[in-house]
Length: 409
Ligand code: NIG
Ligand code: FE
Image 1 (cartoon, rainbow, N blue to C red):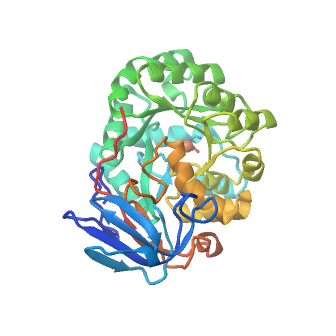
Image 2: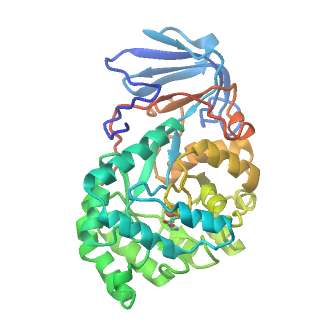
Image 3: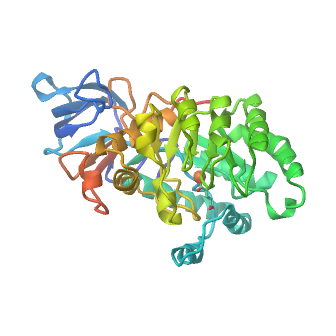
């Protein structure tokens, strides 16, 4: 299981007393700190990492390593920062396997499918929802993810949204209020009334459990004016904005993201040159979700064009029962390399440092003194194998710091 306190049980080491532990004989180390190693990934070969009390205290070549209380020999394996999954929807009940099968037989994906998960989620008990997120949290951890974001959005009533966030908060500090996922069936004739609820009583009930506010700005969901209104209402309550933008068609979602200084514009499957210029000149990360295009058989976003335009790119799972039922970051990395034309280096950066940027965090996504000891070792000599050996479980061990992250509100 995976808890906010940091305990974890998957081939996972958690210090119980204050001592120093050195991970030695690291084949290839990805630090994401260009000042200590080669290239943008700050790579060091034959490296050592020292951990003390859940934090990294020293990183360098073996030739400069002094001593530690405990030594763990990684026998030439690669070591990376734990993956940061900055976009997931893990609080739901039921699945939509028949919808997936129908899509693979030619049907198109639409936002409307969300309503079927809403019905199952409303009918589920708290324990069922808790068991569901715990199961997915275990899968995240086994895929090397040491931080994950969790959105609400399958309750769409005041009580169901607040309970989703309350339960999500037991598993992660990165919780996102997504009351504006779609307009629920009972408000089909009164979308303005639903926006008033999302920005009023539902926001009041959810804000205490959330760090972020999100809105699905797309065909069949909310338009740009509604998205602005919803994000601004959340920001007035101290929530930080992020947005589902341009997944199904060209639109104004990316523009809205930049306008409100969102941490991230997610999907960006359809992005104009102007959108890329806006993103490149902003603090907003483009979070790409390869699992969604894969599972909806949609065109992939042109990630090469984004990176070449100077946009900061993150990769996340988008784990949800409709468009992307995967918890595997290695799978997302492989698809991002194969089908979105990122290099293996870029994809690994995007799944670690990029995810951290998309959550506005500097304590994760890098291996440097002061950062959390969230680490993953591979049964492979380098991170390139994550894309080079698709579908193979290369995760050797995962370390997750027991220290509670300092994130507001
Ligand atoms: O990010 N696009 C909106 N939300 C999810 C899909 C949710 C669903 O289909 O259940 C996504 O892809
Ligand atoms: Fe999503």
